[in-house]
Length: 147
Image 1 (cartoon, rainbow, N blue to C red):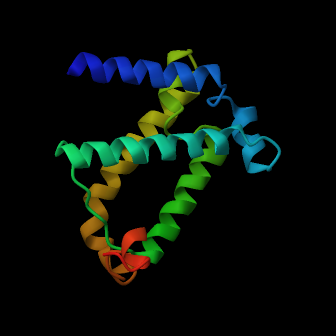
Image 2: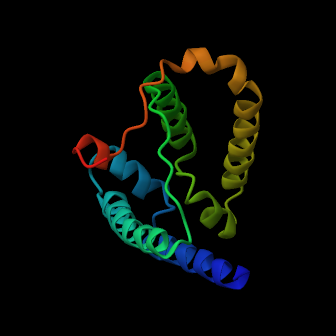
Image 3: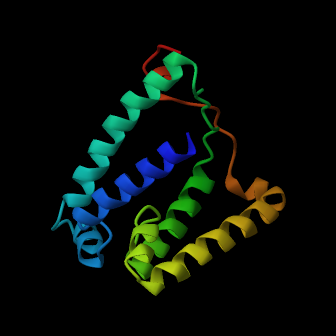
């Protein structure tokens, strides 16, 4: 099973690289609304991922857990995420691909992301109140009246 996961990871990286989704010009072109390659790739990934996740849940290999809606926390997280993308020119999925190509700035981004995750994990209990009120668990199914 581990070999299969590794194979899919390399395949995913090869697709990202061949589509040039790990290049600054492609990422910044999306931010400037001039190059929609990233949006198209995300749309395909969401569609394929939704189908595969539904199959996994149906077969009992996975389960689905909706996280609580914390609007302030989502806003701050989006700002931090966006700032990181603007500074590095990479999104988290393209960092390993760029590192594999030899881009050492991608290594800085990976280390920064790991350090940021550790810091957040350590301080999260003390900032829980600043993340905003828990607005409950919402999904498309519950919003549309199915759940």
